[in-house]
Image 1 (cartoon, one colour):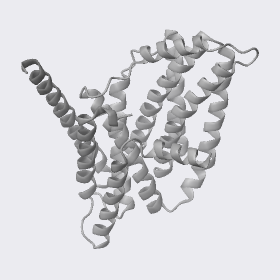
Image 2 (cartoon, chains in turn yellow, cyan; image 1 turned 180 degrees about the vertical axis):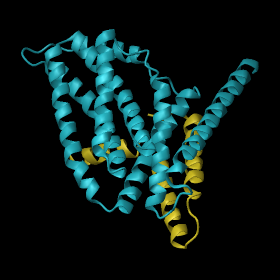
Image 3 (tube, chains in turn yellow, purple; image 1 turned 135 degrees about the vertical axis):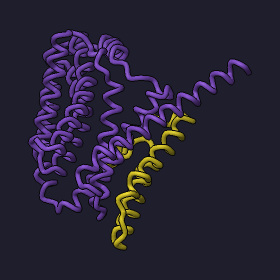
Image 4 (cartoon, one colour; image 1 turned 90 degrees about the horizontal axis):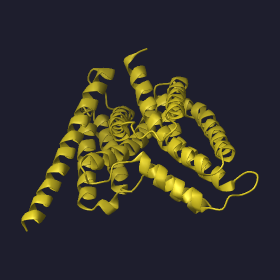
Length: 68
Length: 250
């Protein structure tokens, strides 16, 4: 039951490409580090988000079985 | 109504309308093929469960410090939005089949007609309707809670969601058929762009970044993400054309 619920939550939030979730976590961590250093950090998220999306789309486009 | 409030209402309305169309198709198929009373009972129970989830988690989320809320919820919204947007790009680029309500209706009707009909409450009709409304509704509840909590306006988000459901049900009752003419794939693309935009905006703010121009950065971000997504669609279409040309000449 617990395992089933955990899998359901994973599937609901993370979906079929865990690399996207990992990329978002790394991106937000990097933004926090840059902001903590007192440097402008706003530019990082849009660029990284588009890069994450592009890589995920290319992977799925090359192998449509990856898409649920 | 302020710009961010309007964006919140539009995002929630569109996301909810798309999910409501999908749930409506399944309930219509099960209700028509089997027993309306049991299908509607499934819808009612799922709606109550969703209402309890929103009522329980909404106030809990708004208690969190705004920076923590924006970081966690922005990150979740971003992961969620990128899933929507990726599928929408793949559909628009021809790498994934378009969502077809009529095909879904026919599949669900065939499956419903094949199962044995129970006396009293028909467990099949109840279970399929309950599951459809709960699963599609959970996505809506997630969007209502994340948008509502971040803007400190859960009631507005919930109102937009209810309005979308009422609009879809009214359109469905008038049409008495699956809402196949709703531009669902385009709506999913727009919702994907909006979820990703708000996810980037709130996630970065929660991580300590300050946006130049504050809320005015939102439309710029949305335009940037929409343009990048459109270029990805063009790229996929180009790849598929080259593949088709290659196999035709090879």
